[in-house]
Image (cartoon, rainbow, N blue to C red):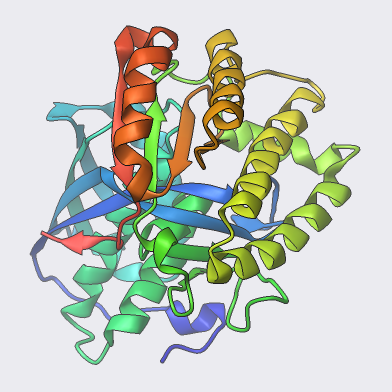
Length: 360
């Protein structure tokens, strides 16, 4: 197994080999939120997420020798269209990972990526995209490093994915992942996410996440900017302490199957995340009026029917409804009869907890 330090992720072999691979990586929804970072994509607090099943990015990469350049070159296609506006983000990713993969200096890459859900609308599309790309890169390495075992393969992919998007570290494995050093988790690390499913109550292994699309347009303020604003935030340290406590609380809840406490923690985390945005300097608001309409109606419905349905939010306007699989029929009926008017063009995505990335 790889040692838990940065040097263990360096791959310095030189080669002029061509290679082609395709990986599918899921989005994830954080239950305890990561907000604020230090160094190169390292979290100021640990986070726990559900890996999703249907919200995925499928990325295909062809590697070919390129002896004329001393820096990775690439073409990028999104949904079959060439998109040079994505180049700065990908260039930064390669800049970050090059010390660990100098072999990329001698290669040209053709990258083609397809999403099954709206991009840049607060459904963690950067997480699934960077996770899929990282998996393709590590798969390329494995051709020269066959002794790389499965556990180390995915650990390294999480390490690299983190350099592209922090939350991407949590989009490698499932059903639940933790990223960030936490006293409650023995093997936790800021460098990569760790999966955990042993001792998890069975109800959470099939949990549902229905995403109500309130606004599928690109966010006005990116998550990268939001993280930077935590550096001078007056409530930052209290928030980091709260997240650490909630990771410990949620670990216990996930084992016991205490859904009421699960809802309490995840809804509090969602609202705290957005309160940090609203109290940043400059302050900003990503929730929309219909986000609040949905939240209020969910609270009313839960009180009226005693249905164990809760919500969480990512850094955007869309609402994730979380509930046990056994409640699916009832909840979908509720959504279709009472919540569709709050969704953009009546759109929602039916999803559930998944098992992580797959090679295609």
